[in-house]
Length: 365
Image 1: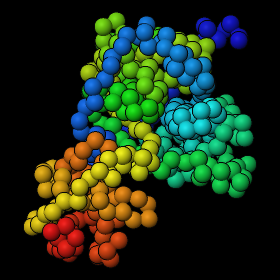
Image 2: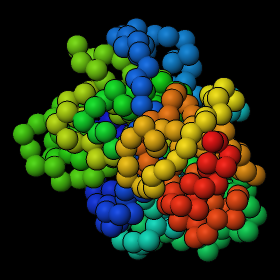
Image 3: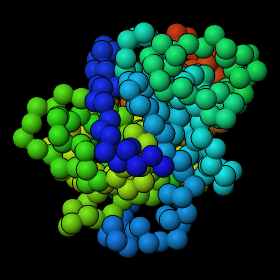
């Protein structure tokens, strides 16, 4: 290790761009609150206890740390890390994934930084491949944006390794909502905003400064605890493994409470969340009202139960991980569209109107 690395400060670049999508598009995101409504009791052990557990020692030893250097690629670094961790959980062996195929597909290139919505879609639609096969140069924006040598075989491999779905966390003032997902054994790509002199320690503190930088980091799986009396999570940065706690930092609840967290994303196959679907009892119900995106009521909850008993070639239409929530969000909208496709109901818009209600009543009355 070069001892000078300890004294070198990362060049601060705002690597996360503000979400410019229309509000109606953002509202249709797959939101965690639509499938995770009840809070599972969490064991908030202390940091000192957490870091001494053998499984956590092994995880921190196995998972490698990225280094973006002076490129604004933090989102792709965090995203490639999340994909690599998901693969690590499945295969029990960690293979570092390349950030370059993700970063090079951003819509704003050649400019630095990335939109979180782009990150999510690229990880789902294209994926990436192991770093050993396609190294990330992390030297200049131009080199990180060039895929001229990305051959078709890499494309095919990346699609095998890509994620199937992504879910947004918008309850950003509540650290518990993020810890709940971390407790599922899932890494979370998190966006944080900070100002000068605010994020350069192992346990950064929120200060009275103007936030100037948007940055993406990754909450590691099952990495929640208390630190100096406050709830906290362990995040992995992309500034190399020679600073902080081997490239990791402790983010306390203050960052959530004080509105420094913008959003979070985790990747999962929708069908992997359908853990309770086989136990869902087929409802008997007469639908008399139109149901549509944005509603929250008990009739939507019944609709979700009905869709949870229906399957197509992709699996269950609506996943039941804990319980049906009664929130008609993006997941229920997609499920309603699949129901309409299955039974040739047009137009396929996800709006539960007279034709869709008639079919539901035929099946569930």
